[in-house]
Length: 425
Ligand SMILES: [Zn+2]
Image (cartoon, rainbow, N blue to C red; front, top):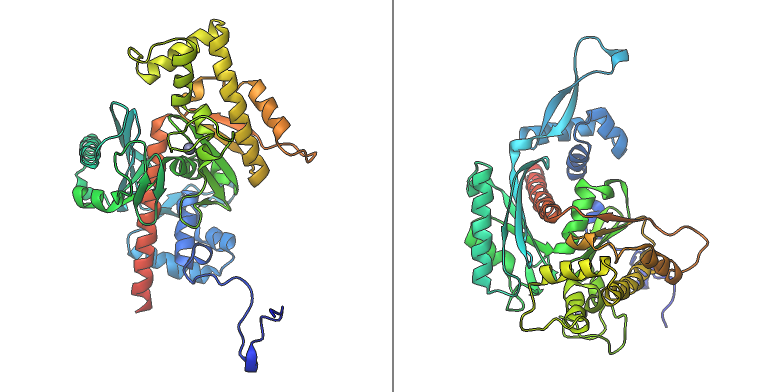
């Protein structure tokens, strides 16, 4: 029988208790990485402040920051002294060396591919976008599009590919970011595509990929409203419905890196058919294609001469605004299903904030007070206020910024790991 005294094994051998955390896991990052990340987050910060915030000795901060300066990752920057202590000499702070590395971030989507190039401190250098026709494509077409976009944005930045250290890429669908595999995506014909390695060979640079909704959450965590929050959700509503969740200031990915497929939670048994092949998914009621499907049927817009989905939705929205009852009911119904999804997020995770993000944010029928009231009814009643809901219509560049953040964090982790090995020798 299992006993509770797991700490003491047979014959005095000690098995230990408590979580067994891998030595270099996210929870136990080396001090040099913590210091670097502190400097990057602060922008400019004196050494003594780094020591204070991390609770370590100023001497160890001085040693490690000297190494980081020697390896060209951070630099000393002069700041204006506080007026009360001004003696004519500027104070010395630390900052990330902007031109140490540059990375590209790309968003691959149904309607448009977008890209940014940022420096090592996360400042935007250039951006670009190329439109595309919706629908799945071959891997070769995708690689060609990525290559074209990369060369265009490099040209805008007056850089060559060799000036970049890595590329982050956001793709809709089920993506295993660690192994770099797209298991399924609405933009690819094939399943189980090892996109990171194939793109890396084609572009001659390290490539990291992730689910696009994760990258919007990463963008909010790095550049937006999520910088100061430990736990928040980003729900993206566009061609599909996605969610990125930040737990304790880190992106939550799940054990197989496939967590948080909000679009495929079931809101109706045997309900509407979803693109994933199952029925009753939230996405099948809320996403663009779901609204378009309803519109073509209810408003008797023939399938044959149906306009592109964007035009169709604009038209549906115009009808709703003009008072067309059927058009309004389509948005209202989608809004009610969205309320079900959002209330489930609140009930499961108790986030500090829910950010709704995506190109579709302008269809404000979906986010009407009725939707929020419905959500309040469905969220558990604790007597405490529910988390605030913010609507961020930042556009596609935000997603590309998230992809750049993925590349930046991967590059810095690799470099700091390399430093660690050198230091250990
Ligand atoms: Zn589904």
